[in-house]
Image 1 (cartoon, each protein chain N blue to C red):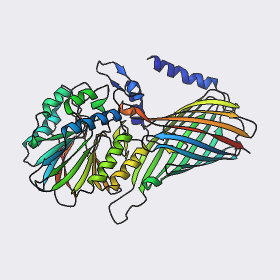
Image 2 (spheres, rainbow over the protein chains, first blue to last red):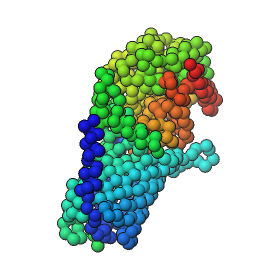
Image 3 (cartoon, each protein chain N blue to C red):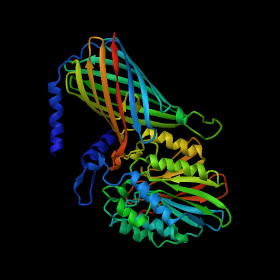
Image 4 (cartoon, chains in turn green, yellow):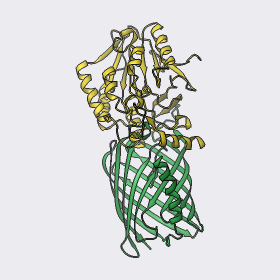
Length: 235
Length: 295
C-alpha cells in the first residue's frame, strides 16, 4: 500500500516539477563503444554509430547502427513528429529496427508505433510493435515459415535527475526497448544513463543496462549487462 | 490492450503468494532459490549416479501421452487424475511426459506424487517430468528434487534391437537455460545426432514465441537465447520441441523444427486438453488432442 501511495504521489510531483523547453536539438553524430555480456553470447563488444537529424521544429529523424563482435548487426531508423505543449512535449515515435543475427543466420525485423510525452524530468513512451523473425536459409518449397509476433506492448519510462537541457544529467529507465533491441513486453530492461557536455559541440555519454530474465516467472535471474561510453558531436 | 494493462497491474501488485500466504514480489527481482546453473549441476551429478535410461518399447510404434500445466492444489486435481487414469488404462507400448507446472506453488508435491506414483513407476507407466516455474519458485526446487531428482536429462527408446527416438529434457523454469546447460545440449546433440536415431525430440517448460495474447503475462526466453536455441535445434536435426507454460495450444515451424505448445491440464482452465503423439516409422508423428471431460 505504501508503494502504491508513493507511485500515485510521485507522478503528479514530476508533472508539477516540469518546465517547458529541452534546449535546441541539433544535428549530431555519436560514436560509442560497448562492453556487453549475456549468458548466451558470453562476453562481446559492440560499436555504435548514431545520427540525429532534426528536420524542423516538428520533425526529427534518427538513424542508428550497431556492429557486434558476437556477429550480430543492427540498424534502426526512427521518425519522430513532435509538438510542444504548454508543459512538456508530445511526440509520436515510429521505429523500424532490423537485427541481422549472422551467427544464427536469422533476421529479426520489428516495426513500432508509440506515443510519448516528455517533460524536463521524465519521459514516457507507450506503444505497440510487431516482429517478424525469419530464417536466412528458409526453403520456399516446404511448409517452413517465418515467425510473426503481431502484437507487443512497447513501454519506456525514463526519469532524469536534472532538466533535459542541463549540461549534465543522470537518468534511470525501465522499458522493454532500447536503441538496438525490442524485447517482448514481459522482458523488462533496466538502464541508467549519464551525459556531460564538455563544450558546445562535444558531449560525453555513459550508459549501463541490466537485463534479467524470468521476472514474470517470479523467479528472476541475471541474464546480461551492457556498459556503453562514447562521444556525441553536435554540429 | 485493457487485458494487458490488467495483467501488468495484477502481476506488479500481487505477483504471487509465497507458502505462508504473504505477498512476495522479491521473485521478480532476484532468484529466490537455486538458479538454473545450480539445478543443472545437481541434475547432471544425479544423472551420473543413476546411469542412462534406455526404454525398451518392444515395438517400433508406441504412444506418448503428453500433458502440461496441471497446477494442482490439494483441493483440485481432477484433470491430472483423469490424464493418469487414461494413460494407465491404455495399451502398451506407451510412455508419458509432463511439461511442467505440475503444482501451483503451495508445496503440493506429495499430492502430485500420490497421483503420479513417480517413485514406484514401472516400464509400463513411465512418466517423465520437466520443471515449470511454479515447480521451483519460492525455494521449491529442493522439494522437487526430493521427489523427481533431476531437471536436465536424456533418455531414448528402442524396440529391443535398434534405437528408436531420443528425448532430451531441459530446465527452462526461469526462462533461461544458462551457459552450462546450453553447452551440455550442444555437446549431447553433436554426439547423439550421429547415432542414427529415428527422431530427436526436445521438451521443456517455457515456450519460445509470442504469437498472440494467449500467453498472458508469462514470459519467454530472452531474444538472444531464442535465436541461439532455435539454431542449435535446427543444426542437429531436432524434429520437435514440446512445451507448455502459456496454457494455449500453438504450433510453429521454424528452421526445420516444429515447436508445439500444449493446452493446460489445469482444472477450470478455458482450454483444457492433453496430447497423444503416435510414434512410428512414418515421416511425421501423428498427433491427437484430447479434451478433458467437463465436470
